[in-house]
Every structure is written in structure tokens, then in C-alpha cells.
Length: 205
Image 1: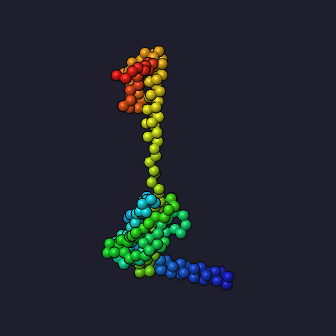
Image 2: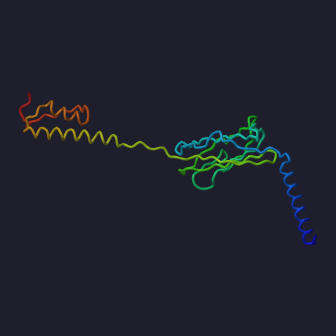
Image 3: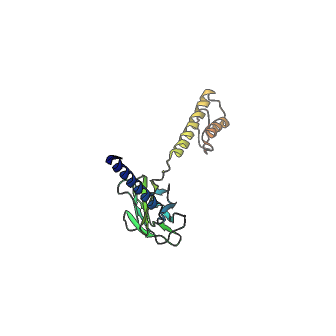
């Protein structure tokens, strides 16, 4: 057996020992990982005009799904664009989870920029980290326009014009009921009666 072959065999054996050690280390029991569950706020719509936003609420759980009390949770808002501030006008808020593993970012206020934004959530429990995120949207309520009123006014005017045209088409002999019906059909009850024919003037009665 040559020396070169012996050296290669020893190197291969050493590599096997290293792999075995790494495999044993990976199978050693590790502390349970933690996770963040989003409970409230994801997909919420905030009112810019009313300065109201939906407070995000999360729950911190261990690997088996049990809630973790006393975990540190930080909520972070974006520095640019749509977003908001927390109760102290800051972009971040750190709280502790309660006995149910829940944490909420209270008194969130939207800024004046419309659009969606992301809230980053980080949690830490006994040195174990976890991250998550949720999305909310700032929106301005749609103002009611006066278009419906304009349509009603145009319909009334059009009804009166239609009555006049109908009277002219009949040679000025259309009845009062025909003109009133045309006006009513165009804009409903108007309280105005259109009388056909030529007006006549006479002494007062």
C-alpha cells in the first residue's frame, strides 16, 4: 500500500468523523423556536379624515403553539410614505405579551398620506427571535357629490321644455293635462302647471 493511498484513506476517515459529529450535534435537543401570529390589523383600512387606525394585535407562541407570556414585542412603522405614529408620536412601540401571549400597539394614528403600508413586528423570548409583518391602508373617504341634484334640475327643465314642444306640435291646442303629464313624467310632481295657448289680458275681476 502506497503512502499516497494511506494519506487519502486517513483524510476520508477524518471527514467521516466530522460528518458524524455534525449529525449528532444537529440531533441534540434545541430550545423551542417561537413564532408570531397576527390577530388583528392585517388588511385594515384607516381613516385619514377621522385620524383613526386599527391597532395591530399579535400573539407570540412557542413551537408547540402554546402562548408565551413576557415576550418582548416591537412594532415598527415606515419612515416614509403612508404610515402613521404611535401614542408617543414615535415610529416604534415596544410592549410585553400578557398571560395569553398577546401584545397590542395601542393608539396608532394614520398620517395624511393615502396608500398601503407595512408594519414590521419582531418578538424575543429568552433570546429566541421571531419576525412577522402586516399591512394596513390609509384612505380618504369618498365625498358625496351634488350630481344627483343636478340631474333632478336638468330633468325638471327638460320636462317643461318637452311640454312646450308638445303644445307646439298640436298647434297650440294641447290640453292642460297633457302638459302636466309631460312635466310629471320628466321630473315628478313639480307644483307648476303649464297652460297651452296664447295668453290673454283683460281687466281685473
